[in-house]
Length: 92
Image (tube, rainbow, N blue to C red; front, side, top):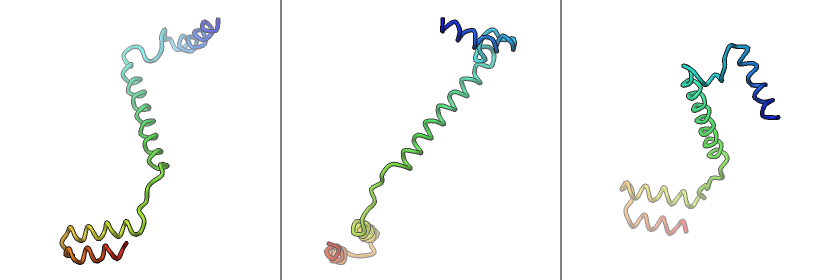
């Protein structure tokens, strides 16, 4: 009984518009599929954006950042091995 009532409720507005079936049938079916795909894509993008924004981040401590900077300077050749080891020992 409930299913028949739902069919009548959904069929009445379509019948009033001259449609025998839903708007997803006929020559415009691709518009509805594209719309559903874009909505689905927007939901996925929103979930990814929200999770990355709210996800707890691991922030480096001051010593860890200093070690990283020191390693970069050593890799670029700005300081030699002895100076690198000396400054690294001072951080510990």
